[in-house]
Image (tube, rainbow, N blue to C red; front, side, top):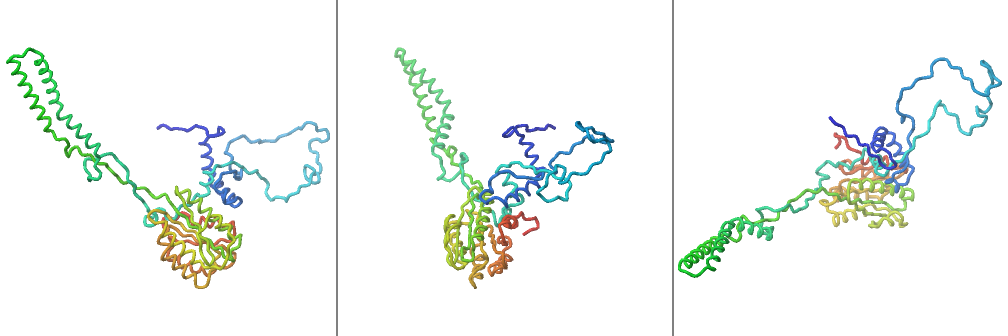
Length: 428
């Protein structure tokens, strides 16, 4: 058995193999450090690499060495005052004579942290480790396979509309050349003999030979013309095959309440959650479209700038946003072509009686079309009536509808992980 060891170096003459081995060995510590880094950096910077820090303890390689052992006597240069066995008092304020500014520790040892840089791809790998798109393997929810047609050469059977005339004529010409090749060779030879006899003096014998050669050539020409110009064997058809192409397009709906009860801090938390979801989807789909729907008493589709920074406010009727979302889905995003995800952020407050309408709209118009619907309620107080109504929807559609509670910024990523955590084999 032979082994191939990759000794190529990456940038700055560092071994890529050793780096990958280091990342695998300390995966748990690095993953924890990345999660701590997420809490400190802006959500816009989450898709970038950077420097992270892990405890130095445990990163050193084990090694064997000789201990000091035995009884040792040390003599230091410059000692003129003390002899062996002398005792002296400890200096005030510590060995260095200074006064420390920090608090004392109950641990007898400490080590500096170990800092190193990881790139964007590595950062996102650790950030999304353990997450997956919900129920990706379930065919009834996720299989939006399309078929594309491709040219795959030519075939001798097909429908008339796929007939390739050039290829068919080329095949017919080749067939005629192959079948009449011996006759043409004989005709050329006979013509040479005829031209030679015509140059000689005219006599009865020559005239008879010339007539015989002309008749033979005429017979061969007739035989050659009996070969059909085109035959069924010559026909060539364009071969068109269908190849399955899984859909790589996804659309993400961001629905946010902008009523008077939604403070700027709540909107900022919602913004971070939406951007985190967008980053997650971009790692699974090549093409992502984002639809922003904001609502108070009325819903409106807006651009990103207006979605996050408009100061328009009012009361709260959540059903207006769900009705607009359902209309956009029907008009622009057929389920056969798009993987659809919806994220809704609200403080849970809603107009009396409207929450039941929201549940009905979800069950009848939206959930049958989407892959996943995530609702997050951002509030420090008790749950509102919308949460209580959505709990029934979650029980009826546990595979497509999920809901979580967020209190502050630190809860965003843990809640996101719970919404999109990898399902176990026994899970629905």
